[in-house]
Image (cartoon, rainbow, N blue to C red; front, side):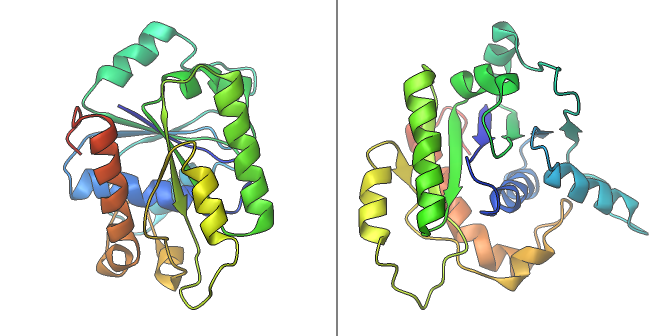
Length: 221
């Protein structure tokens, strides 16, 4: 199975959600996860490397492969992508904040594209640009899943109802936003601690429930 995290704009917590999902699938769903970091900032891989270097560190629970060469075209073979798409293992891709020829085919063959966003005008505009490119320039087989991140529980976003309505025209919206929690700043690539679970597990459960429905429980996440 291929789950891809992508946005047009950085800084919306994409990698944090990707790390949390990889940890949850590995530690609590007991699934084999392979992570590939295509982001130019390499945030996922950097965090994984930091965890590797910690004294008495917990052994890695999955590997994170990074793509460094801009001219490199990994996963450019359709047969390779079809094979991992049909696998019961989870192939999780963290893309950059811009669309790149290196992962054009990946966007086509992904099962799910998770698109985090915030209820700010800049984030929403960037999200709509990303949607427009994917839906109009790629004959993608992927289902789009939108998840609101860094939401303020005490604030009534005036554009929320309209934004949700627009996004639901293109894909599925995870019902519960991920609220701002300091605990998520402490996430690592080895554990899924209680404070992290409290902050994001309900959202991940909703996300996986939607994925199971969209894929007719093909992967039984």
